[in-house]
Length: 79
Image 1: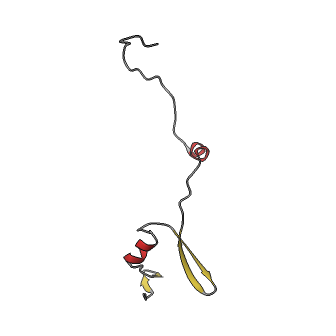
Image 2: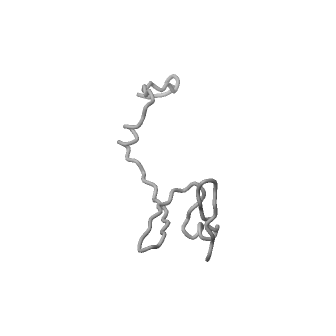
Image 3: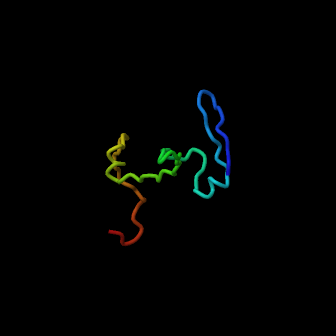
């Protein structure tokens, strides 16, 4: 398959046909890695890195204040 490099503003770009994107499971706004190896341009999907619970907690900037949850009065032999 052939495509051309086109001017987009102050940059140049290539359009990736939909069938190619479907084969590599990419969609608009996905992140890709671009590199050159042996004179060839290689575009690869970037796997999303899932953050650990510890990383998510460290990034949390909210104010967490646990509170009791009232489910109403007892109606039977609840403890």
